[in-house]
Structure formats: structure tokens, C-alpha cells
Amino acid sequence: MKVATEETIYMSLIALLFTFVIGIFLGLILFLTDRGQLWQNKVIHGITAAYVNIFRSIPFIILIVLLIPFTRSLVGTMLGPTAALPALIIGAAPFYARMVEIALREIDKGVVEAAKSMGANNGQIIFKVLLPESMPALVSGITVTAIALVSYTAMAGVIGAGGLGDLAFRDGFQRGNPDITLVATIVVLIIVFILQYIGDYLTNKLDKR
Image 1 (cartoon, rainbow, N blue to C red):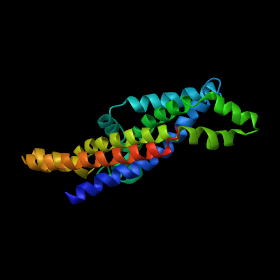
Image 2 (image 1 turned 120 degrees about the vertical axis):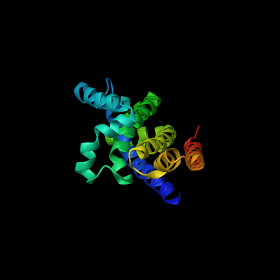
Image 3 (image 1 turned 90 degrees about the vertical axis):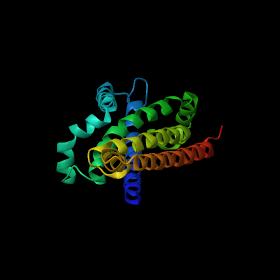
Image 4 (image 1 turned 60 degrees about the horizontal axis):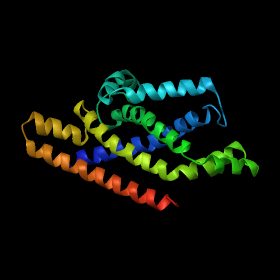
């Protein structure tokens, strides 16, 4: 149980870190290249939106299977916690990118116009206005994504990624030990509750309204 819990936490946290960075990047591209925004570009926006929509829509268990050749070429195997990371990141980053885009759209346009009138360049507007103003929503979004990632790790465990999902399925369900499945489920719930608490705490601290 200890090893399975550590594997789930490892997969969730590493995937979450990459998801946050990639999701912020994709979300900014989606927002900034849209019509009427700083970097309006129909082609780049269309390509980015297509990527996000496609990978956000593929069921995670199917995505893992589709990415097996890519995972093998990158990691050398399709088994173990590290092998689950490409699918976890590719599956979660587009999901979070849409949340980033929504958070940026909720910013009062007057704040951006005020920054422009004071001579702020595009970089300053992005890093000193857009991201700070949207940070409570970004943290709230990454909290939702983190919880989704925990559930993704459970699904990844069914095909050999390890973690609590693997423990619950192989040692619990397949070997007829419902107690193991129940305990693994409880541990997953505890991890989710902790992530939700941390996310809510940070969101409330950052929200200056």
C-alpha cells in the first residue's frame, strides 16, 4: 500500500507540474491569438484550438493505448509510473488550457487598457496584468485538474502503470480481496481531499476581491 500510494503521488505531482506549465502556455496562446487580442492570429489560434479540442476529447484510457508507441520510444517501456507520465500530461494539459483561457477572458478589459495607456508592452501586460489578475482562477483550475489527474492515475494503473489503481484492480479485484480495493479507494479519497483543501486555501489567499 505504501509503495502504491507513493507511485500515485509521484505520477500526480510530476504530471501536475508539467500540466501547469504547458496548460498556461497553451491557454495564453489560445487567448492572445484570438480575435481582438494582443497577438491576433487566426492560423495559430485555429491550430492550437484544434490540438486542445482533440486531446481534451479523447477518453483517457484510449489515449494511453494510442500513445503506447510514443511512450515506448520516449521512456523505453509502457509499464511503471514514469511510463504513465506522457499520457497523463498530454491528456490533462489541454483540459487545463481551456480553464486558463476562460480565466483570462474573465479579466476586466479596462485593466488591460489602463496598462496599455501607461505604456506597458505586451510582455508586461502578460506577466504583470493578465497572469496576476487571473491567478485565483488559475489556481482553482489547477486544483480541479489535479483531482482529475489522480483519477487518471487510477485508470493508468489498470494497464500496468502502478499506483493505487493497479493495487485496487490486481490485488483487490482480480484476487478477490475487496478489503484492498476499499482501502485503496479511501487513500485516493484522502489524496483528493488534501489537494482540494490546498487548492481552496491558495485560491482564497490569492483572491483580493
